[in-house]
Amino acid sequence: MRERNFLFIFIFFILLTVGTFVHGIYRDQVDWRNDVQRYHCFYHVRVTGLSGREVEGTTVIMVPIPASKEGKFFTPSPQKDIYFSQKLTHIVFDWNDKSGKTPYFENMTEKFDNKVLCNHWTSFIVESDKGYMLEFRTNDTRLEDIHCGVSLIGDYFDIFDPINNGSPMLFLVENLSNISSVPYGDYTKYTSYPTYDTYVYLSNNLNGGENVSFKIMLTTNNDPTEWPQKYVGKYSTILFANVNDTGYVKVSAILGQEVPIRNKSLSVLGSQYARDFYDNKASHVVK
Image (tube, rainbow, N blue to C red; front, side, top):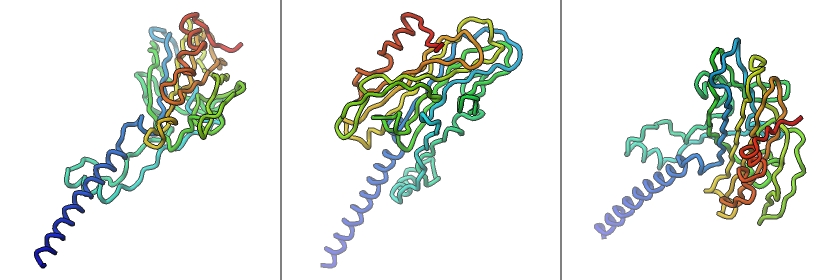
C-alpha cells in the first residue's frame, strides 16, 4: 500500500510538472504571437518627387496620422504579468526576457514623436491649424524621398463600422460621405466605399517644383485569435494624391473593407479611386 501511494504521488508530480510546462509554453505562444495575430494596423507613408531637389532652410511635410475621425489616438494593448508556469518555463529554458511581463507595445507618441523613421527626416506629432498631423522635418539642402512603415498594436479595433466606433483612420476627416451598411451576422459591414477630405502640408521652400506624390495607407485588422473565421477581417484607408502646391492642400481619401478576410469586393486597391490614380494620374486634390 505504501509503495502504491508513492507511485500515485510520483505520477501526480510528473503530470503536474508536464502540465505546468505545457501551460507555460502555450501561454508564451499566445503572448508572443505575431503582430498580425493581434489587433494590429500597419501605417505606410511614401512621399516621392522630393529626391534630388535642392532647397534652402527647413523642409516640412505633414501627412494624416492614425486616429479616430474625432482625432483620438487608440490605446495600445496593455502589458501584463505572466503566469507562474511561464516564469518557470523561462527559467528552465533560459529565456532571455526576465521581466516577468508580457510584451510591451509603444503608444503613438513613443512610435512617432521625435523619431527618425526614415533617413534624414525626423518625425513629430504636431497639433497643426487643422488638427493632429504627422510632421516630417529636415534641414538637408538636398532632399530625399520619404518612405517608412510602422506597425501599431491596439487594445481593440472595430472592423465592422470603424468610422463610427472610434477605430483609426487617416485623420484629419472632413466632408465624410454617407455610409451605407447591411447586416452581417451579429454585426454590419459597409456596402460602398466611404470617402472624405483630409489634408497634406508642404513647406514654402518646395514651391515651384514638380509634383510631389503622396501614397499613404493604413491597414487595420482585428485579432483572429479572438474571433470566429466569419468575423476575421480588415479595412484599409488610403490617400493617393499628386500635389503641386505648398501650404495646406485638401485631398480626398477612401476607406474599404475586407469582411470576411480575402473578400475583395470592397478592397481599396481595386477601387475606382486607386485606378484613377495609377491609370489616369488623377491628382485627388480637392479644389
